[in-house]
Length: 92
Image (cartoon, rainbow, N blue to C red):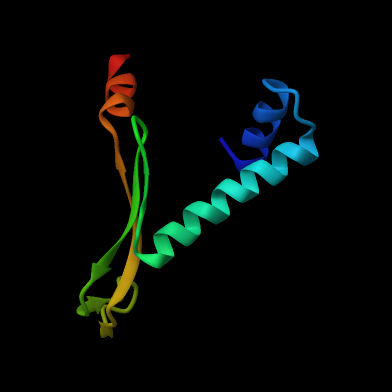
């Protein structure tokens, strides 16, 4: 599902227009991004948690040239699914 599909689904299942649904989706994504970037994280009970994880600096290998390069430390966004989401996914 793409962002446009999500906007369409929201507008079809509610009384919102497509423009209003787009504003809602953009607002939610902005709030998720701010929560992850700030280090607080975002928890949606029953769905899962979004947070950032620190990755240490390491020695990487370019798969094309086999050249070794130093990869700096960085933060990566992570998602941990909640129990309810895991159950629904594994039901089928």
